[in-house]
Amino acid sequence: MTDSRRTIHRDLVLMLLADARLPVAGHTQSATLEPALRAGLGPADVPGFVATRLRTVTRVEAATAVVALHHLRRGLDLSAVEAAWSARTTSPAMRATSRSQARALLRLVSRLWPGTEALRAVSSSTTPCRAVVLAATAASLDLEATALARLIGYDDVQTVCSAALKLLPLDPADVTGWVASALPAVDALADEVAHLTRPDDVPASGAPQIEAWAQAHVHTTRRLFSA
Amino acid sequence: MTTLTPDRSARTQDGVSRTTIRLVPDPAGDRARIRLATDSHPKCPVLRPMLLDTVGSRARVSLVPEGAMLLADDHIDLDIEVGTGTRLEIVEPAGTVAYDMRGRYATWDVRLHLGSGASLVWAGEPLVASAGADVRRSMSIVLAPDARLALRETLVLGRYGEWPGRVRQRTRVHHVGGAPVLVEDLDLDPVSAPALIGRHRVVSTVLLLAPPDEVPIEAARHDRFDLETGGILWRRLGTDVHATVDSGCWAAVR
Image (cartoon, rainbow over all chains, first blue to last red):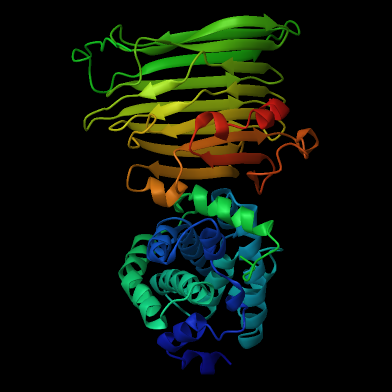
């Protein structure tokens, strides 16, 4: 098992994890775009929405993952990382979404790569957030911190943009153009957070409007996406 | 309105106006002792703590601005300690307008420490950041897990019909021992504000940190963010102060 894992190129692992076909219910997520559109955002606002998330909530998630990866590699306790993330994620709806995505991901990766120490460490936590489970996956598959942060940034951009295609009458090529235009910001985000090691270092960039939309979405009965 | 702007050219760049409020239990009885102090340059404005009344272990203090504020190079620093088992209420006679700082900035730093069983109710009045203002605010709170804090804050970006000023707000709330409760940075300016708070100019918050049995579950179900470690943040975004500040919510938690 160990030998066969070593032969997988990291690029291929990253492709697998970033693939929307990964059975972790990614299609149920709009990364708060659905309530944002209901509140009045239009198609032209979507690229700005993507950029705002990368500067705020996604930055917190990517930094949390990087710090968790550092802790896992050194066998440090993860509870301080989880506490840093939850104190920076004011919206209970966003915390619940992250944890339910984390459960699905943990179930999948534990089956694909059973017996890795990092996944065992995370499984012992009752309700790990998605950033921590992604960090354990990265630790198990020998991904670098920068790659992990890029994965989180890229996944968020794709989640918003693919949800936009279901919610708005858009040309898929235009939307792919938005994703491509956001890539430099994803790259910059990864470079900014990749060196972080301490829970206190995790940026605390709040986004009150996005958090309010996330809460409002919980209480609506008319929705296509779960979050 | 005519405002005489005091000449602050004589003072040093780091001239900080310090205000200290300490409410400590008196070991001899059930009364509390209060210490109010300020330390500032005569040319600098300062927040003067005025004792309104005191009964037993409770005290009410008004924070009265002395001198025009908030202008460029004003540095307001508040250090407040609410000792074991004491109860402090802070009121403000009026809101604060931060004026155009023409490339300079002002700071407003608050440190709160709440001991075991202590209670602080702070009815903050609006801070209005006029176009051109640049205010760096920090709020650092350390509290015992059984302390009670009710804090109201209202941030207004720009006077009516005006561009937003800049407010960089750093909030750090920890339990004694270091566990984080609420950690948030907001950097609001004319460019970032539309992305961070949408089509709004008012951010109204009520923060309640209290033992679980003291949290009014029914109060203000909307705009409510239940924090991971207990406690609730109510945050409402709006365009007008009177319509955004939820007085019912504040009345329920204060």
